[in-house]
Length: 502
Ligand code: HEM
Image 1 (cartoon, protein in one colour):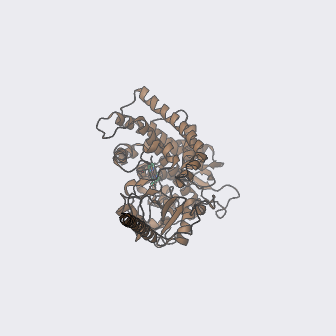
Image 2 (cartoon, protein in one colour):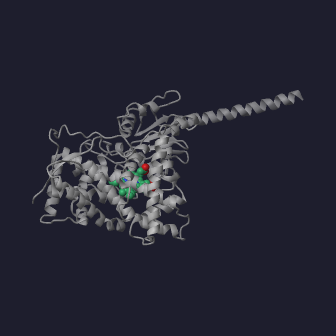
Image 3 (cartoon, rainbow, N blue to C red):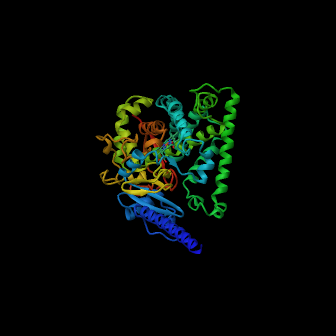
């Protein structure tokens, strides 16, 4: 009896050790195939590398780390309890966003994104699945298709005219261009989304900036998910909740006014009318609720206003830094529209190839989302010969990709002409150039964002001559970036505009 018992115990322990050994070997094998990365510290891993210089934007920190520790544009980072893989190579981005797109289509949620975007009810942070597909379809067919974007051109024209009138009235004085362009973009989005500029707009716009800042902050609770005690101490929590309450109250009010005004149902008037119509539609597989509408509105403001502002402001900044480019772009627009008082947006888009190259080069040098939201790996995959384990966070550095010297000659210089004879565009098919992303999660506001940037630029160059403030030279003109989710200038762009007399 005793012998039998000992035998059973022996078999049990042997099986246990074999199992343990197999698991260990499996894990070790997986680990062996991970991309290389910087040396890790106990508990925090490589967290200190990300926090060492708070003034340095994340895309630059990651870019440097990949150069130093990565291999073929891929690097592993252990961020607290989270395993991340950072990608800076066009070839690897192609594998991720084309070959394995389905595996990497769900974005990681942080406390900020969950709270501010209604638990993934909008497009931006909804996990990949039927609900997200349905919303993307509504975005593509009803909200932001090329026809609708064109139909917003009268909104853009009116808002641009307000900006031009302001610049005329401030002729010869220094003007804060960043502020003015942000106001322009937000007014365009407000009117396209709601049909009018609503009460409480200033407060709302302040909160939009706050959302962008909060989304760009490191989420400590997300980095140590098992340290529940840390989550309570997370200092951003109150700020996030406060912003959410303010934004929610404003949007709720707008929807209520819409519903009460009886304007509902006239789709085509504004994006919110389209959504309210969809809310009543019985043809939908998954219902659209009040909160869905709020989340989509948050998507549009967070995704659309700072990105278009950053593109337009960086384009003006680069032209000030490179007077040759400014002169060439100005000559083009003034020749094409010679003798005209007003510029037609369709002509700006179709007849100014050099200005288009300027915008494309701006998006290469300053992609407004330089680092995409981390994607969660849905099943263990082999990418570029390396193993990416389940649930790894994959971070694509679009900024570094746009500066890869294997694909771009003289990548640090601003040279719009590089796009002259090139077929490279931003529609997500050229993986060395991803300002709007690629694959299933590509930006649905691409046409809207592009028109919002190129149209004001055409007008600004046609109607005004531009000078740097007194005492600032081309060499001393500051081009430092501000850290955050969407990366704009650290200091506001201030310029002197003088009306151009033809
Ligand atoms: C120059 C302007 C713009 C640029 C450069 C830009 C860039 C991007 C990029 C790179 C992404 C993908 C991010 C990722 O994968 O993590 C994205 C997603 C998104 N963008 Fe844009 N964007 C612009 C304008 C707009 C506008 C005007 C809107 C709407 C009004 C918009 C709405 C969105 C939304 C809703 C998403 C999330 C899509 C999804 O996750 O399925 N964007 N944008």
